[in-house]
Image (cartoon, rainbow, N blue to C red; front, top):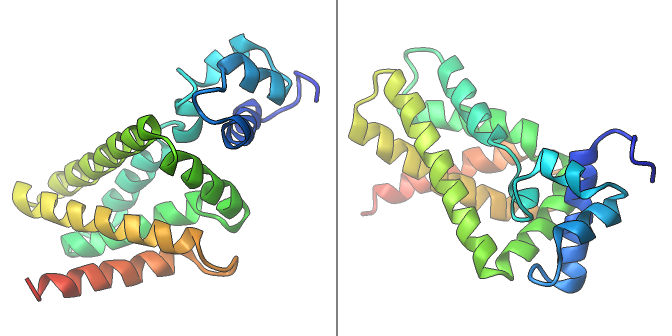
Length: 189
């Protein structure tokens, strides 16, 4: 593969995932990843801070959730805003053509404590983004935090279900169902 070909970040992510699965996260270097992608170390660092970030990427999801919450009509409840955000962001990120990559990514993360920790930090960041977006809509702090937490739980459930389902299942539909289930379960507490 020539160095000048487009989609360097995507090539690096696929190369890293393949190497992490083959050799393990600990036994894979940035140079290994760049070489497998047909790129140089400098190109790697132009796209990613370190080898962990290959699997976590940018803050795209944070931005998508925030924009989606901001776009919801003013009369929507906080949970309706969160549901809208999960559906909108999911449509961008959890596409059928990314299902296999995402499932493989999750297996690599599950096998490594350092990556699980990074995933947890990313999830906290997503939660904080939703909370702040809700607060900008005038939602009181505690209500915003609770809605964001419930949304984060629903997103986690939806992610687990979506990555383990048939290719035709829509993430947004799964996320809405998960949020409905989470909300219903709060009535039992």
